[in-house]
Image (cartoon, rainbow, N blue to C red; front, side, top):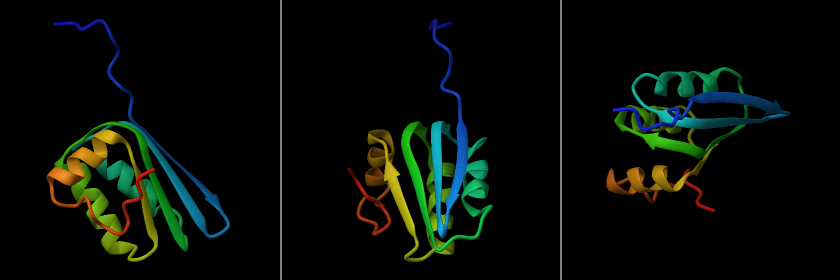
Length: 104
């Protein structure tokens, strides 16, 4: 059944500012897009990486796995800025108190 609206479009873009890489992700992060998010965050070597997920509308187990892999590859160098949806999923999965998770 057509709900009349277009599905959220996934995008992941990265901007390197000196030693800080900022990755902005919007839309749905799922098994079809999670690896793209991960690869975008790993594309440029950086001292610090901010994964801005405030525009994410859907976040599934593949997305969780990608963020955990990223945190493992970037210990003490990753900051995740979550949307309410992302916070909810991470809390349900037991990851709501990770040091890399920064709530506004």
